[in-house]
Each structure stands twice: as C-alpha cells, then as structure tokens.
Image (cartoon, rainbow, N blue to C red; front, side, top):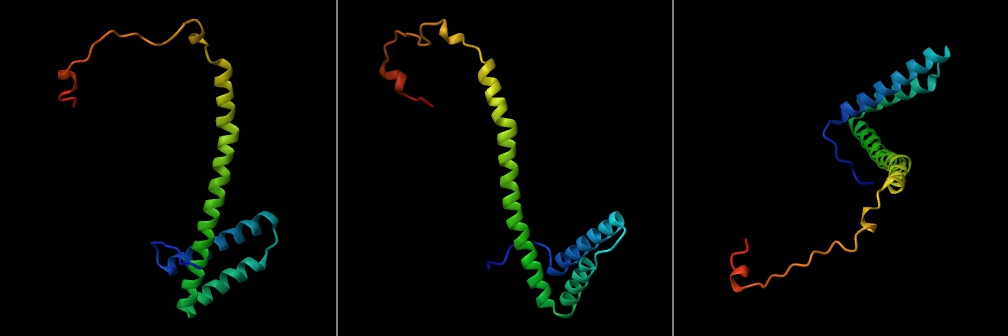
Length: 126
C-alpha cells in the first residue's frame, strides 16, 4: 500500500478520527436514547494504540487517509455523473428544442472576397 501524502502530523489525524467517532457516538446516543458502545470502544482503542505505540498511530493515520482518498474519488465521480445526468443533459435537450433555425433561410454563410494577394501582404504578419 502506497503511503498517502498529507500535511498534518499523524497525531492530529488520529485525534480528528477519535473526535469524529465520539461525535457520531454522541449523536446516535442522543437520537436513539440508547448507546452503542462499539463506537466508544473503537475510539478508545484507536486513542490507546496511537498514544502507546506512535508507529501504530502513524499506520492508523495512513489507513484513514488512504480510505478518505478512495472515498473522495468514488463520491466525486458519482456526484459529477449525477450533475451531468440530472442537470446538463436536460438543459442540452431543452436548448435543442428551443434553438432557432435562422440558417435555413440563407443559401450560404460564405462571403466571396475578390482580392489578389501581393508579396507585401505576407511580410511582417505579426
């Protein structure tokens, strides 16, 4: 697995991960009035591993950043596809329906220009 590039130190990434898990735990506990101790256990385990074994915290941070990178690519592709299908395609079809047909009345857009080029026309073009 290639190590992802990120600017923050591993301890900040792990702290953010633990904080996020605890916020999810608090929201779930508040909404359902019963607590799911798996999230609390996971955040405690991640915090314990990263504080006792700094290399373990680095590994956890690398895995978290790799997962975020993969999810960013997948979600970005899905969102761009949805925008294309749901917004741009109907707009293009609407434009095709409402487009004017002005060119049908003209025989041609070509303008005939009678001009003889001389040698001086090709000197110092720019």
